[in-house]
Image (cartoon, rainbow, N blue to C red; front, side):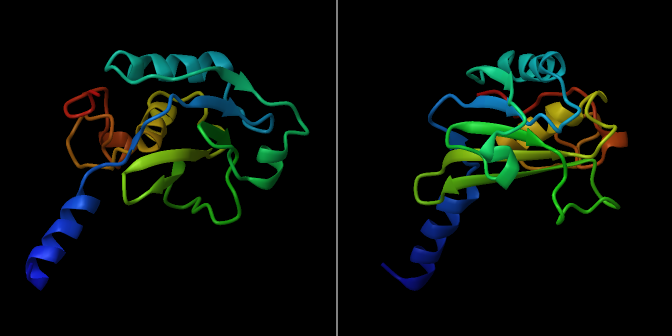
Length: 159
């Protein structure tokens, strides 16, 4: 196998979107302005396309994962912005932990800018990132990187 062939195999391995093998719970940190009702509504959008989720719950004030900013395994954690959050560029941001060799997502952390937790499409969009989808530039699409140009289009988001 030549160097070019090896490179192509590695590029293909990392080119696909990571995905969950287990069903993630969704934990909302107590400091977040997101409500269980609003997050459940956002999850319903993704469930309509075949994605699965476990329990949705608000964590208590002394939850250690929320205090440290590190989500537990098999969990999508929704929290307030951390110190590294770029307030000038983002309404929300998502970090995923995944095994690159098999493409399995292990956990995810969503940070939502205060005041935007109840806004249309913000949580839905960030959950899309937590599911492994990337931003795009398709007008009216859920994963459009610009909130003003986004919408509820679902092309390519089905499980």
